[in-house]
Image (cartoon, rainbow, N blue to C red; front, side):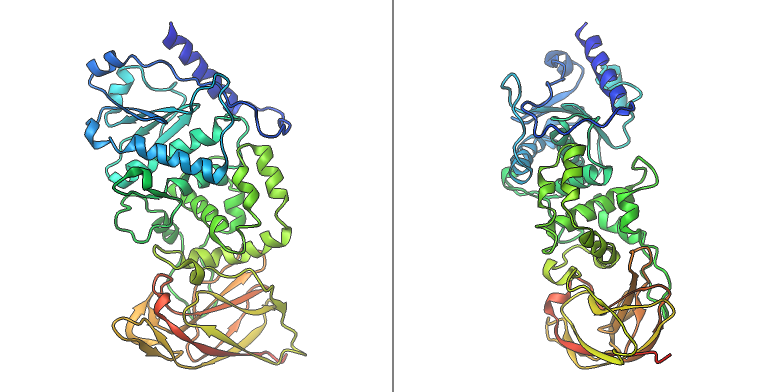
Length: 457
């Protein structure tokens, strides 16, 4: 009887997730979180069926894997809970005074869970993992890192939705992005000391994660000789996806990237701080209203630049394009020429001007600078050095990108070298850097001087 009741509750929750309803009024933080909907586990019966149960204060994990292979997962969930409370604010209390805890089902052979009637309703499809109330289900993963990551991702969903449920959630880019963000972790010998919300320092030890690799798959990374369009997904497409559901891994990757950006860019952390308290759609709307339109407009521009350079191990201070100062229109009658320095140890740097569609400019570059300092610095000039290449171009070569003012167009990297001319296909901004990986710039020094000459017509 209890199992039937539980199934009815699950079906009811699933139905309310998709029903059309009026936007509920924002009543502020709830006094109590939703009631714990988990069924009692028949532990002896589950053990007799070959299931193992490992648990901690915040997680009961039911699995058909050997207990010793997953013993780290419950204490890791406990550590994540503490971090979520610290970063996103404490949860509302339970009406009965119970501690927050969820039950997870980690499935190696899903048919065993089907036979044991441990799965949610059939309509509740599970691709990799799904959550519902204080429970989640996930398929086993071949990589140890990604098994932990997926479990933490679903755990974050349970944390974020236990106060308002599934009918009143923020947009998917935020709910999935915040889950991806905190699930990205560095495991330590003592799980309680693990780090969450990191950008992996290297691809090693993060097998199966692949978010940066997914982003790169969606980019045209080969440089061009002229302003050819990149295949980068615009920020507005990420914020307003054409499909109401996430249907591929790249959407998760872009959602992770956006949440990482707003939580780590030094010019955005303050603006987006109110997002740290967001659990419901109304809270999201209120926090979003606090972001000036000018900030979103600048983010439209820096977004493709950020995606172009995002890589494991990048230095945050050196790899993020700056929102300020805002560039000024290039006025041919005033701005005959402009000279600007481009630092070798910084990623994309704005030329400081907005150019008009169809306008042609010439650029000349001069200077000597050091790229990499181990074991000794390599001295480069604007044409780069052919002792090494990055993205098919000489290391240290001056390269450019054009981004339209609405962020809908971003060019591939344009080879500049010592001199070139560019005709703008859209009203847009010019950004420059020396050709290098964002993960390797910390050893660079010096600068290149770039002179821009406007078209007299």
